[in-house]
Image 1 (cartoon, one colour):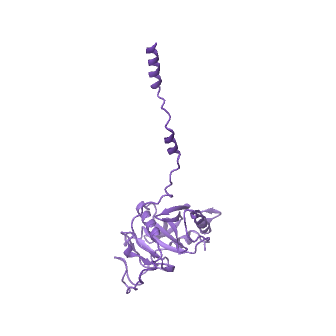
Image 2 (tube, helix red, strand yellow):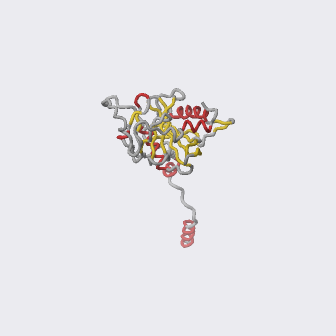
Image 3 (cartoon, rainbow, N blue to C red):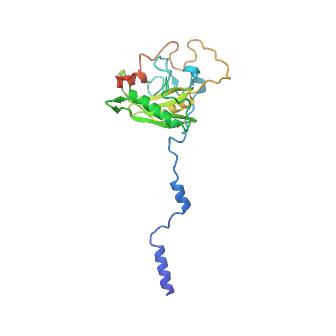
Length: 254
């Protein structure tokens, strides 16, 4: 009889049924995990030597390390290129009046900025009652900054012809004003490395240090990035700006 009981117990242990997981493991598995947008992604460095004032109140922008500043243009505040000999990939910084009444973005009011930018984009990227955005605006964390990202249709000059290009934008609030950092690349050639560089530019936008010594205006031709034209050379004749591209895709947009 004892032998029979031992056989029964052994068979029960080999039935293939796994014992339930400990309660502590179940609780850990059920705990919500932070989404990629909720956590600040590690960004590449910007070159502080390249920082220049670009907007009202002296807001400053710096190039990602390894990128150079493109010639000046009235179409944008500043533009960076990974290769000064090639138009793409490019990172362009623009500014605009802030939609809504958000003055400082925190984790608590970031959704309000997303909604305000969504309404602003709807006025520019709606056709026949439908949105033409490739990706709707969503909250994103850029270093210590709470921002908004989206993707809109765009066109630019490619080999002398106006063609569609890939564009991803990041909207950040600096000094109560909305700055848009737009990354562009030829269709299908937008890389993660370039995207991180654009995020770094957006995260590094900053107001000047009030305690810093005033800068001396350089002589014409100085302060340009290596390999770029100096003086009054511009990009106006060669490339269209993000705003120009938006108008081309949306003839009725303001």
